[in-house]
Length: 206
Image 1 (tube, rainbow, N blue to C red):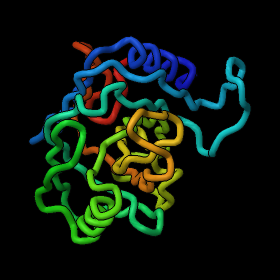
Image 2 (tube, one colour):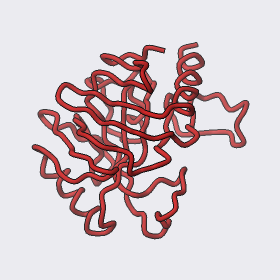
Image 3 (cartoon, rainbow, N blue to C red):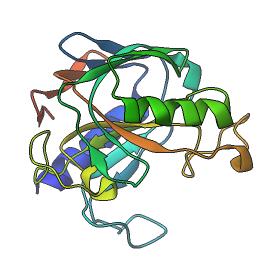
Image 4 (cartoon, helix red, strand yellow):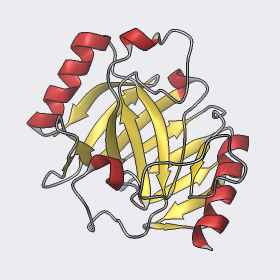
């Protein structure tokens, strides 16, 4: 019942919105863009062309139609490492994002800095693409698993770093040149879709 209620309601709002804001204790990231048709993973395939997906369920994700529309700062509490495992530093760190790319950071751990440098070396720019709304209440900021594919369903917000996103094709992002898709986890207190709050203190308000 929870997935059937929250998932479609969240998808509807994302698909119709013109702005999304992610607000942390000392950060605010703003998407000034309409979004691509969002994908819904709640284990209900009745209206979908293909049947099946990765377990566990519980996610709605999309990305802005205009990738350059993303500006501001974002606090992260966890990220996927080179072994596809979840890494949680001692304290959150901040990314500075301009026109959809990471231009700087504050207090990022060395392992994450190395990931950024590798992306920059190969892809030249460090793009932010996927915006994911995890729904699965079995996982939280403090209740974690190490597998990145499972943890991205965590009840909260995750994003992807790097130019690769197989679900959405964009002009200027040729498949052969897009190598990286690194999941990162936002330390957010509130999320607004347009002017409505949809997520606050670890819970969806839909």
